[in-house]
Amino acid sequence: MAYLRMYADESGESRLETMPMSYEPLVYAPPAPALGMSDVSPAAGLVFVQFENGWDSELHPSPRKQMFMMLSGVFQGGLSDGTTYDLYPGDVVLMEDTTGKGHSARVLGDAPVEAVMVHLV
Image (tube, rainbow, N blue to C red):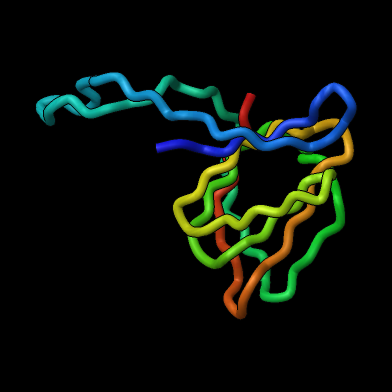
């Protein structure tokens, strides 16, 4: 698995990079067998969000460092340099663009977008 990391570069432009997810075997719930687990990321909160059909935003920075996990629908994101990318159920974005020009987003299609945002510390 991989996730997208969204960040602002030194000139304030939003950028994306693909980050690999690494897993280590860990016995998490004995007596169940070991499973692959990532490192723990401290979190301050978790919210479920819904973006209605037709929702569309201008460029804005992320209000906090957070993980954005798509559950349903299709989202199109935009970077400050004009690059666009589509997000589908199962896609995960680490949003670190809390400074700079930010990103835009809009719902594609007729279905709302449902997602989980985990506020990171």
